[in-house]
Image 1: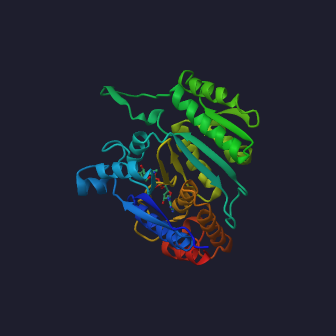
Image 2: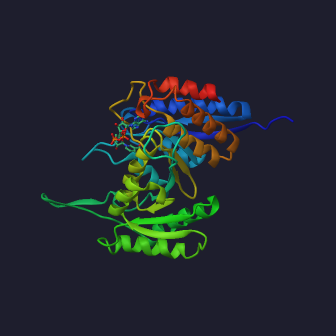
Image 3: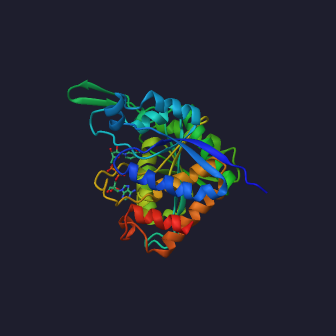
Length: 341
Ligand code: NAI
């Protein structure tokens, strides 16, 4: 029987720093995996951040917003955000603009990697639009700066709902809500109340609460006690990087920013300026983000094929990048994954 041909229109933001290298490797692997399955991609490429500003005078070009509105799915490389001044984070702006309230970050060990932490398999659900990341800051006077932490009932209920729906659907046993409600009694108190309310509707998923500082120690001592972590924006950002260390570091952990209308898939890591342009970056995190995107697009077979090829390359251990103890570059890793397809 003739195979149906499917073309997915995807907004592609290569980003800067290592972004162009890791997204290029990912695009090539996706095309090699999907073409034989009758699946192709129509990539709509856009710059964002300083590169976009240099070319168009806008940090996020209008055409990029329109492209995401139309395609509803984007694959994104990291974009550098200036520290202590300059333009606002492109990532935070996109997440807010498209109301991508759920930041989903699965942290799972790949075969073959040397680590003190074996068989890690946890998932982080991070609220993605509120908290201290609203960027509402004022100088009260030259010596006092104030930042507003915003937590809403709506925002807390929907991220809790997303986490519990996921747990119930995928057979996850336990959700830990992570907070600091002992100090931030109103904001984190509201977040916890909402988590509890949603938890009451899911008899099959156990629910517990841990304070963020204790969670950091608990994670380092015994990460296996965590199944699904449900938390606010800032804690989720920090815990994501911490948890990435259990499975080999930032070069590996993927992510999805999910909303009711659109989804943007991107790695946990940033633009890694220290290794940009040197063929040193590990594309696995963006590639595994693209695997999440393939599932989102209903391309489960292509997703499984790419994931199996990644795992085969890690299990063989001979074509790994330096961040995970290997000796090869981005391009050689990409070619090994394509060969393993
Ligand atoms: P980073 O994640 O870029 O790098 C931290 C460390 O991890 C560096 O040593 C880097 O070399 C290493 N690393 C990261 N990704 C790697 C990969 N794929 N392969 C091998 N090694 C990798 O964090 P940093 O340095 O704090 O941030 C750099 C810039 O990235 C900042 O401007 C920050 O705002 C931005 N950023 C952007 C994000 C996004 O676009 N989603 C997310 C996080 C940070």
